[in-house]
Length: 74
Image 1: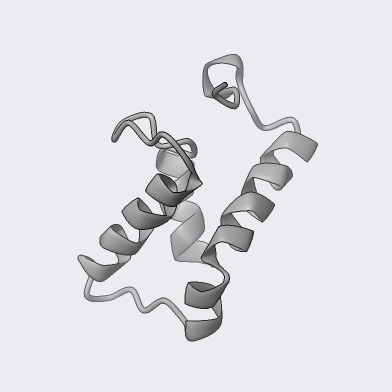
Image 2: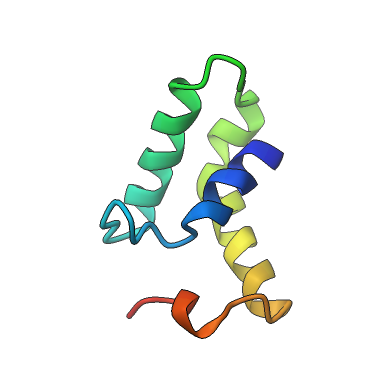
């Protein structure tokens, strides 16, 4: 999950690439992973990527790590 975390940490809600929903965030992460030859996404993570992303968002919300400019978009 570390590599997925690193992609999410850079732009958790996909503002830089204009994500409109969770599927856009998932697609972006998969493209980033595919374009990085040193990164291998385990099958269990591939199959549960949406859950892992949501868990990461929940972690951010529960740990108060969201700054005002990173707040969850409407």
